[in-house]
Image 1: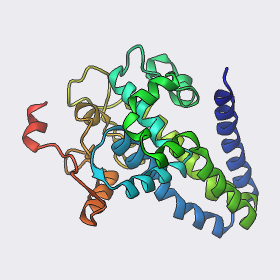
Image 2 (image 1 turned 90 degrees about the horizontal axis):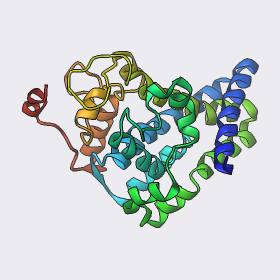
Image 3 (image 1 turned 120 degrees about the horizontal axis):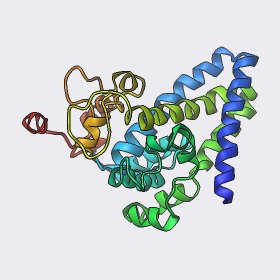
Image 4 (image 1 turned 180 degrees about the horizontal axis):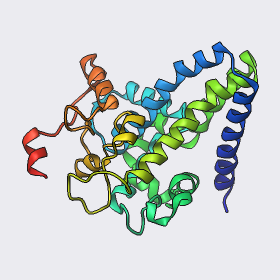
Length: 267
């Protein structure tokens, strides 16, 4: 097994261990304050940056804001460019051979091991996301995606000690790891399927609430390039509302939406 495999495995294990120890020691109010300041940006980095923008190009933005989004992903130890390549393969082979986190391969493979070993070669990933690797700043984050998160954790440790580092810097990646895995696993096993798709994707209300709209997964697989996963008024999609805010402020544009008549015709 490669160095990357063991580095990622040990890293995920240490994140869990450090957070558990910090909770046992007792975080301070400042520790929780830092967490609540960092978590929203890390969540945006996973749900909006990595998924809806880099993987699916659900909207357009400037080169500067694109870099900011990629940095937000780094707060969760996410690699936006690498994820985009891996996720496009997921849609291409969803729930079939070639989909590394299909639930039928087992809980551990879907929930954890697919994060450790994406199942695709570096050449395959880079060919899939060549448009991003032409940008020097994105190519740097692709190669050194762990650096911003490690620098943040180092700074928090030097400033506030162990619990500040664990709660402020590591709890966000820990939660977002399990939130993302819940989508991969639960939303291909349990829920409603209003649209007929070639895979087993479902809309799971509980997962949608816990992941700010990502759990409307059958909707997403039917309309993968839509910025909006919650297609009806009652399908709360916080990430889409944030994208709308970014659009109003001029940070993003050309937001992809699905016409209501097309939504109804697809059922």
